Figure 1: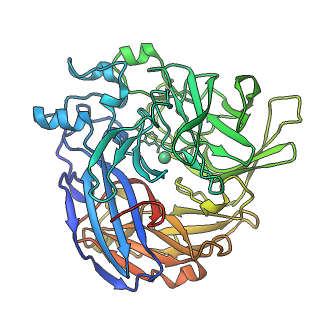
Figure 2 (figure 1 turned 120 degrees about the vertical axis):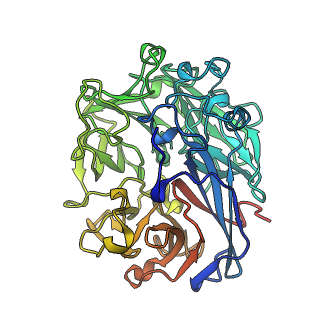
Length: 486
Ligand code: V55
Ligand code: FE
């Protein structure tokens, strides 16, 4: 493994910045925290072609209150992280393949001992949790970011795994979630849960998938839930052979499972379509007999580090995402569905967000990072940045097929945004778009806050970190009303 250098070199330290430097003005109404989950190699991977999804989890937050900001970053102290530190080396092998771990650290049937907890954050029933789809959540102290341990919802959550993309119904306070490979490695069990506002499981459905795949994100409507199964495949043979967890099998169809929110196993209906990767959705709704899903989707394998089953080289053209609408008719007597591209001529980076007050209901706006080639890039100051330049946030009008955008700067690349409504009853999309930009010229990261009424005006505030906070996977804003940040 060659030493990793440059902006994306591992950092490995934990950090506290008590009062961050701010350019511009943080809107005084903002009181809460932008909590981010990402990853870093605490020890280098055992295989140089391993997936970055196998990096150790790291949780950080920008705490914002009274126009000021502080920053805190901590490793997620999983058993795996602690074991490696004790040994002083990497003990764990390929992404999600415990057979490839060192003897004594395989824990084939205990995924919570192997997880790296590096994907997403959830606030529900007053608890802050970090998420990784290969394990149940880990609870984290919202003041210190100390890792508290695995959480099973008072014992009611039985799947071994929990998605990184649960959905909260803002009106009922219910948490909707699922786990795939729910009963063990490569198992075709999908367990689905409705958890009440107090954090107790009130409905469980045990389902079978048409084939075992990465069901990374999903969508819910007011009356249905939607599970996308797409051609990342695995098997016990592949895992026993010591290989990475997923391979892309382009010969497989996309299978979309749709079930009533409070359904039972016999209610699920599987629709079939061309191979796509649906990694992160925008939203969905039910209109009469139709279920409509709006989502970025890729025409092929999005991730070069998951090899193709047929040995083909990764194809960057098929690895682009388009924003699509997929319409499923529950009154139909066939398993097909209709696809449309909503914003022609534009391919977005994945990581789409919406105004979460509209989860499950008809909505107009999607937010996503993208690369606007009409904007300047200052290569003399930024270097080549490893080719990773996502210079803009788009606010996409999914009804009109148009967009407005925020440009982060000529030496910047943006991570996933979140949206904060201006007030609880503000119109859809009226508020602030927030996120973290890597500034390659200054070798530092900056949290940006933009006003959606005038995205072209640039950031109203930039919160400056005196170092790079490089890999974020997902980040969410939680207000002081949701979580007691202290
Ligand atoms: C994703 C990310 C993961 C993972 C599986 O972006 C899927 C998709 C950061 O880890 O384990
Ligand atoms: Fe994700």
